[in-house]
Amino acid sequence: MTVHSKEWRQAGGEVERVAALTIEYNLRIIGVCDESTNIGKRDAFLAALAYTNLHRRIELADQLVKWVKIYDTGLHVTTATSKTDQSGVGAAEFIEDREDLQLVRRARAWLSVLHELGAAGPNQPLFRALTRGGNLAPRTHATKRGEHMKGGSLNERLQHLAAKAGIPYIEGKKVSAHSWRAGANTDMIEAGVPLADRNRRGRWADGSTTADTVYDRRHQAGKGDPLRKVPLYGGPETS
Image (cartoon, rainbow, N blue to C red; front, side):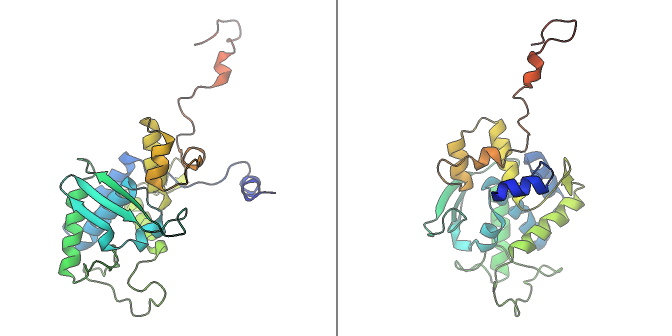
């Protein structure tokens, strides 16, 4: 029995998937971030970047300052390693700025905070754990991850923001860090973006159909129910 078959049976015919933070939901997440504070600036930029570059949570946690270059029109982001790039060749994308997500403004605001905290060196982590007062959290005992946040910590942060925004669950599915990935992919599907382009942005392997079979959260809405071709009892066929 394959892993997928086992999951399918254990879930009673449906593999549990996380919710999709599509653009409207992600803007609600960003909307609860107090961007007058260091924590709010970090969280708002984190949410904007995670959505636009379809980041896995460990990719976000491992991101370095030097891998994000800021231009007036967008960001050039390098993802050094990912699940489908174990050799560490890396993948680079230019992400155009958008009026709704304001990626450039938020990137500059967060990098300014890192400079003020003395943590903007090129080889330092892009995202840092902060105290309630907005200072760097002590990492003395973080022997494994060092200055890097854990992927689980990023996930917990998103879930805190989702609860604050009133969307801890979307359509019965729990919000998690993977929800950014699922949400952006779902939005692109609805916009007609080809699979090859979505695979490149999401760092899925060439030829992979995972973006369509696993990360589409609209449940194939709009494809039409084939039963509609059956005429109504006593009536004409519906179109």
